[in-house]
Image (cartoon, rainbow, N blue to C red):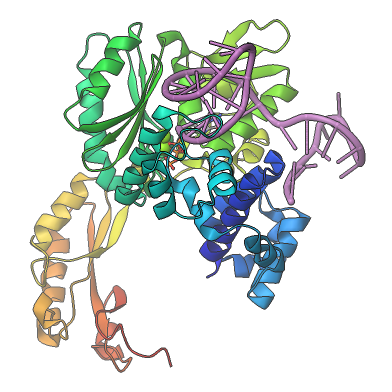
Amino acid sequence: MKNLELSRMFDQIARILKIKGENPFKIRAYEKIALVLENLPIDIEIIYQQGGLNNIPGVGSAIAQKIEEFLTTGKLEYYEKLKETIPSGVIELLDISEVGPKTAKLLYEELGVDNMEKLEKAVRQHQIKDLPGMGEKSETNILRGIELYKRRKERVLLGTALPLAEEIVESLHQLKETDKISFAGSLRRKKETIGDIDILVTSQKPEKIMKTFTSLPQVREILAEGPTKSSVITKDDIHVDVRVVEPISFGAALQYFTGSKAHNIKLRELAIKRGLKINEYGVFDSKTEQRVTGEEEEEVYTILDLPFIPPELREDRGEIEAALENKLPRLVEYLQIKGDLHCHSQWSDGIHTIKQMAEAAKQKGYKYIAITDHSQSLKFAGGLTEERLQEQIEEIRKLNRELDDFTVLTGIEVDIKTDGSLDFSDEILSKLDVVIAAIHSGFKQESK
DNA sequence: GCCGTTTTCGGCCCGACTGTTTTCAGTCG
Ligand SMILES: Nc1nc2c(ncn2[C@H]2C[C@H](O)[C@@H](COP(=O)(O)OP(=O)(O)OP(=O)(O)O)O2)c(=O)[nH]1
Ligand SMILES: [Mg+2]
Ligand SMILES: [Mg+2]
């Protein structure tokens, strides 16, 4: 699957064009397609083979051609040429916070700085503070930026960030000056990984909220602190952004801060066409500048004649177009989940009895579960022998007679052995309701 | 470079914080 490779390439193209001072809208187009490809749930190669490239939002004829060239030749001539024009180390300077394309270009052209080590040296030798637009503060900021870069984290899993996010929300929630508080950004959109923690607060006393936020014990470094927006780095190197607005702007601010960026841009463009202007403070009439709405998030969509778009869909992957036609997909909700077809019990490496599992599942509103313990090859996980499996089937039969309005299905997670065969014969497997086949060893075998 | 229920050309989101600036550019959300 080449999605990520293509995504990275388009992102690099965007970064090079930025340093070269190219048309910002062209750059945005490359940034956008990089993001789309990073998050595309389908193999781009398959989309290409089915002739569907142009159906991807953000793909036009130029980018479609580039994707095709890369998929068929393994290279992109345009990118290869572009790369020649700027040393890769200069592009990497953009990863330092507070260093953008203008600064990177300046440093490269004036001082020949083409990697981070050279930059650090130049700063320490006080070479940069006399460059135009630079000063004393620039020195300490760049050094801090390099330090932060060295400690930087990749995106973290939603579940990893959640406890910290909840802690911070809890701390701010306790303030009497806090009116409403909500997760925002990718955290609220429930992306699998998040780049930072975004939190929205409404209050009439923003200074108090900000002071508390930036003085939290979890905070290691304050990146910026203003009356409506502050950013910090926590002791475990997670970036946290807090925005505070007045209660009357809660809806508009939540819409803005939930994003995604691409979703916001498309929504705001739609608003412009309808004679409206959207920002984080509300929706305004373009002509009169009068505020039209913005206290509730849903109103921002309603005023555009759109149904409410759930945060999980706000990635500009076609959801606004779908909303315009009232064809938004219905998201699966917890209450709609009726069963679980992969459960382990005490019989192998699980920690509860089958009966306990069934009762817990019933409690959750499920109608069925399948018990799929490990098979005999997985000795360390208490894998079931043929005899044990037979006993388990009997036990499940008995249990089902006791249970009301709930079914336990028989099953196995049968091991795929290193020679490719299964741990049980087809005859045994055919007795079961559910069979999961899984590889547990031999991961380093040749692909032949 | 993308896109179109006003457009196939000419638009393209909008604002906060910082530092160096003498009025705003750069960077970021
Ligand atoms: N209108 C507008 N909103 C933006 C822009 N950049 C960011 N936002 C809004 C939407 C984002 O979801 C929200 C938070 O910004 P982040 O940089 O934290 O992005 P997000 O949380 O979506 O992704 P992340 O996982 O942090 O990389 O701020 C922008 O350029 N324009
Ligand atoms: Mg974020
Ligand atoms: Mg953020």
